[in-house]
Image 1: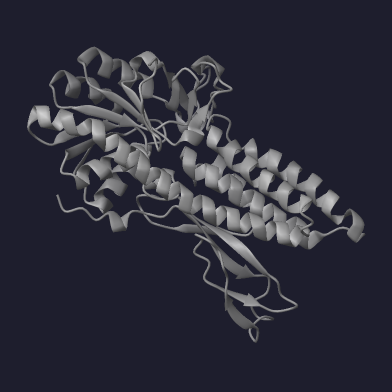
Image 2: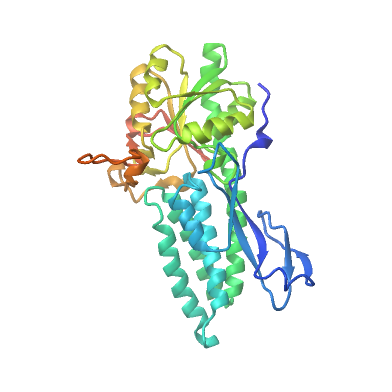
Length: 388
């Protein structure tokens, strides 16, 4: 296998922009200290403050074209999350923090009539924006996790006497840190996830065929991926022969995103319709299933893209190991079981392009796989066996 993991997409990044490039043409260029963010050159001028832009791969356009959304408007980030331009639990966690950052820059520039009330008014308005951002999608707990991380940093900066502008800059640094942190977490998930696959491959005396559902790859994270991170780490050890990817109706993340990403990475991939998994397992052609998660309850029940539950039931019936790979930030101990996880319902047009009179559409975006059907949950901290 000729791997090209350097070709994996970086889903979200932060760059410098300026409010008016023409007015700043004679300003001094300065390299900004951005932590892990790819910032580019910031034009610094007393009259033209530099403001960051969030860059996101527009996944709605894949695989036909690779295009990028760049914006300094936090509302556009929210729209990107709602419309699945950026998706995947870890990715929208970073996007949530990035949106709070952009809101902070906007509010800092707007200011308040009196300096004595500026910080208090800024904090109130920032929390209002954060609430809107966190409500963009309800099931993935990472979104509220990223927003809460940003609000905590903002509160700490304001408490330390920082100005609104300085607080916004602290949030830019946080966003950069989260991007770096996410990659490190995903690589750790991958390393831990490859470990239980090794003895399976050894027992079979050959590399493995792995089934995945939806996209939990680099496109679902800042970089590298969770479920596909396990695939990449295992492939580097010679443990993977091929990945079968469910198309993942109704939006087709497997057909549009997963096989595109695997192709770029050099991992042999076969796309199948969702209803083909059973026959493949019955024929003994699937050695393991690895999927991601958008929220994991305290008891190990895991919410993931609709259709995951069906795959888990099949895997249990045919004796195929079923692994869930996700960062610790996806675990939500406030949800005792999967019954406590809110399930997003999306527009009927995703299923039925042309409405039919008298026909209703039920379109939940996620389902919950009971812990009893999960062989192990893999996080950056290791391998967890639900019920143990």
